[in-house]
Length: 324
Image (cartoon, rainbow, N blue to C red; front, side, top):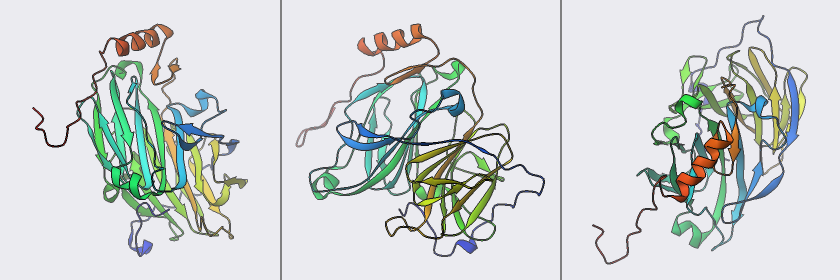
């Protein structure tokens, strides 16, 4: 699980140790993600399954894609599909995905890259492995997160952000026991590259065996800790947490996590995706690819999609012919 790393973590800026009076956030729940399939059949873990939307707010949905080792010919993606009313954040840890959308956005994302798509008023998009990966097979592992938009911004113009892995802010825990990648938002004065409509923070944290980390956390944000790989604990009472589990934390100033001394060879460290955001606290009407505030708005979204008002699939170029 390389994503983005450094040879010597001690050369990085350090996250400040929280003050002695800071309150460590307690664990409200730990849930295990059920496994399923998405798109054309790639395996996923439904990270937020069974968790109340009010505890997730402003987040809606998250899939851990893989980790899977594809044989030649096996890599899969999605067909063209619509979205409206929220943002999709696709983070690739291992492997490669190609994105295209009807708004002209798109690109190739690979190890440590993030594709941040604001669907807003609506568009069509597709995510597929590149042809060379389909031919060769290989390792694929990533995340897709859905971030809600408040009512006032649901119909904002679509936007695409291509965030290279080398652009994320890299930090060290105070003792060098953990590498913190700030993808979006701000942690301890360090800003990630992702530009968000809804105030959030998104981190990929790798904790060395036996290490513990206390991260200062905005008390106005919620806090979610998802284990991408490895074994460890979360919260002041050190609740066990392992790959495929989500911890929802209560209020406080500090997110506290630790890695077990003994890890499996497949996951030599504890890898976590840690999220927080300012709750929107608005009604949510979500169905399929649309996240709105009312059922009437959902019906309108489906009607707009069927009428072609969310965009059209771009013409595919044909070899040997010029595209006008």
